[in-house]
Length: 153
Image 1 (tube, rainbow, N blue to C red):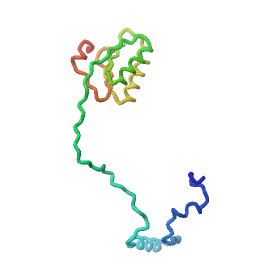
Image 2 (image 1 turned 120 degrees about the vertical axis):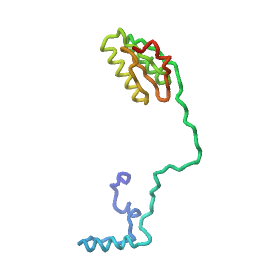
Image 3 (image 1 turned 60 degrees about the horizontal axis):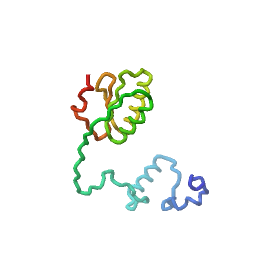
Image 4 (image 1 turned 180 degrees about the horizontal axis):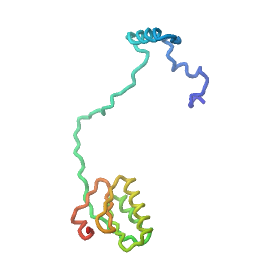
């Protein structure tokens, strides 16, 4: 019950600020007097635990890693079990070219849904490079134009 804040009031006395006796404010004049007293108090009754939002600088400059280049793995989709090969290669940071030519519409739609989900979840990208041919590229991996020759329309 204490964890949820539903315990007896005595359990929370250490958290209460007893330094200032609080009384109900009956008028706006009472409010202004109370506000002036709080603003003029040189010792606030709270401890500031606010930290600046800027990260602490270590003074070290580190170069960004260039994107790796990798030759894409080509998958000619025939059955839905090809999704395992597509996902495994992509998660191993290898670009994947999926060829849906000659595949029925239902299978290509299911594989496309799977592939786009894998790309989205891992931060990769997907683009169409030809007629019913798509390239899945993992984050921080580049594919050269040479590797895409023969797939483009």
